Length: 301
Image (cartoon, rainbow, N blue to C red):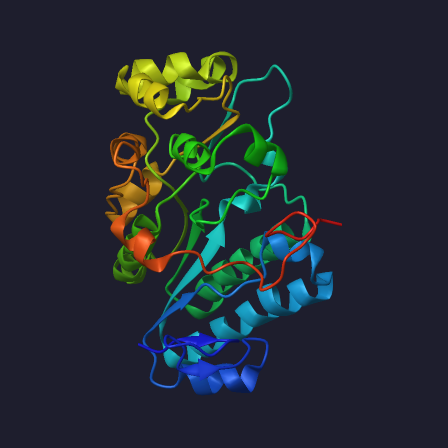
């Protein structure tokens, strides 16, 4: 195993940037499997230029892909459900958006644009050069507080994250196991895009009621026990849920079995910590080393 990063750490074997093709070539010597998770992501929109995003997320991905082809390596690209962009936001009074791999991305910032472009480069490397390459669109698994100040003020952090396990969150342990499953299955699949998120208890025909009375749908699909736990903790469930991520393709085609869903997280909440053992051991690494006007997060331009 070989870890590369911009920053030295106990997990970093080579320090450098994926924008440097020569560095990437040296790093790829002898490699048979690549997990590409390097990126500028959403909070960087306020601190980095659009050119920086193109350089890292597109050119850097291209460098890795071409060297992976040379090395005949299997390639896993860690993408994001943020790539769906505006497709995640249904109009007022419309049903919740049901998000699976058939939904066409509508990027709304440079982050989304460059991640979608990088996904297309992955597909091209498979079509033209035969690279076994899978794209994993991961939902939110970082432990930091939410980047939306309105949500941070409306819900406690653990409350908000537990709610999201219903429809748009992923435990880091399940994120890791999805990457392992993808590495194993990539040679047989060739190319594919997969949504990696906790398994929702909802069904597609719940989307109308989710927009009107989400607590009622949660009770119907999960049973009433969550209400007692929420009452004990002083938590709230939002009245409306506007999007649901569906991981069915990943479970069926990758043979992936996520362990951490809403029910599991609610059970842990009664002990005071909703995180898995792996999430607790990793802790918070942080998006940035500085403090900003909006706390941990820079203010978007």
